[in-house]
Amino acid sequence: MSAAISFNGTSEVRREHRFDAANLTHWMTENVRGFRGPITVEQFKGGQSNPTYKVNTPDRAYVVRRKPPGDLLKGAHAVEREAKVLQALESVNFPVPHLYGMCMDDAVIGTWFYVMDYVHGRVLWDATFPDVSRDERPRYFDAINETLARLHSVDYQSAGLADFGRPGNYFERQIARWSQQYSDDVEAGRDPHIEKLMDWLPAHIPAGDETTIVHGDFRVDNMIFHPKEPRVLAVLDWELSTLGHPLADFAYNLMMYRMPPLIIAGLEGANLRELNIPAEEEYIAAYCARTGRDGIANLNFYIAFNMFRLAAIFHGIKARWKRGSAASPHAKELVSALPFVAQRAWEQSQGARS
Image (cartoon, rainbow, N blue to C red; front, side, top):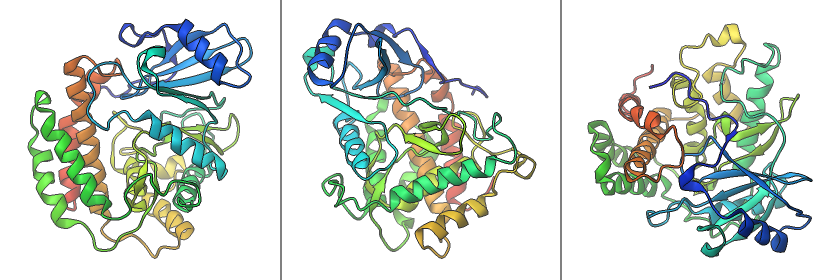
């Protein structure tokens, strides 16, 4: 594994993800209010699943996010779901980019896509916030914490998302989904820790249930911060969003405390006190205070579930890489992390703390 994979910035559009810019220009002229060409197109380096592009015009920049070309798993790469949740959350003043339009006509650029605003700000790929002053770091972590608690407080029915997922039994359904995807992606090989977790997790789901909107990939690098202030301007990458259990979503975010800074923005090994970053216990307490909880029981289950899911996602990336449809040039490096993440997931399930 590489200790520092840079997903920041844009590059020339990769050969396998090119499309007819004239067709996009015509569609945006017809469907995006205020749009004026000509355009130039670059591809964001990040994004493992849905290719994402920066579209520059004389007046402003836009972001286009599309399904990848090629054979796709049923239900995967549902950009129309991303568009739906963006529109719904903007209506309740949650920080997301403005959605300009959704195209479900493959003839335009080859696959379905949507166009959203390009939000100017900072994307931070290092969870230690090295470019932020020591005094301000706690405020950035508090902004992340507050934004996630705020998401889990949204009334999904009033926001028009009552049909965005099935309420209840989230863990049972998610474990089955990722287990099935793992089983289907035979070309990616087998992993003993994933297979043990496929048996262990369904037998240890905690009692009780809750349903909120969940982001599914709530990490520091999926947020755009204000250029100078500890404030989240926009939350990005809603591909895994659905109706689900808020503690699954929170534990995924909390996972940064239990992972090294190899593939995700992790804090393991960092001197939190020296950096003035809240300890895991403080971060949990802040979320609990915001959501009216008296602590979080069975936390190791929630962490293990998320690491299992991350391992399953990496396994899927491995399968797409072997099929030649992985969206990122860093797919091979992410694939190399699969055994480590799967093992760490199993360790968490057994109550181990790194």
